[in-house]
Amino acid sequence: MPEKTTVEKARADLRAGKSPTTAAGEFVHEEIEHVREGKHGARSPEQAIAIGLSKARRAGIPLKPPKKGRAKKSTRRPARTASRKRSTTSRKRSTASRRRLKREPKSTVSKSALSRHAKRVARRRKKS
Image 1 (tube, one colour):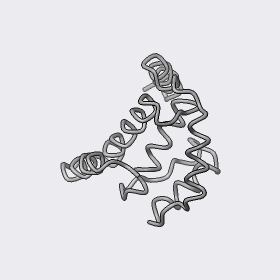
Image 2 (cartoon, rainbow, N blue to C red):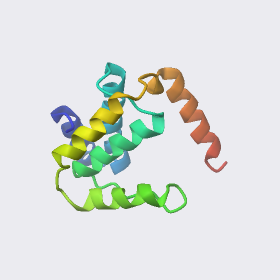
Image 3 (spheres, rainbow, N blue to C red):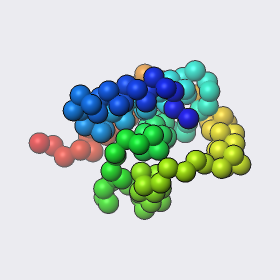
């Protein structure tokens, strides 16, 4: 469940005319903070970002699922359903995923790891 302030900031971004991805950035920041605080871990920076984007979709931010070439089919399908339905995750599944995340390392969202990720993604992008 995202924090109230995060949802408010994201809604304010949308009202200001910013893009949905900018509004979703608030949820990604929140998720990175959760990992840094030790609430749970993440296997990679991409996983922390994906969790944040998933929370944004469930909170009603009109994010489109990733394009065909950008993500696996197993990533696109949940993204599509998360943006459509408003149901909550079952307690059993929620507990299982939280328990699994608690075993993951916390160092994956350090400044250096995020910097490495940003550089790698920038290199993958088309050169304009």
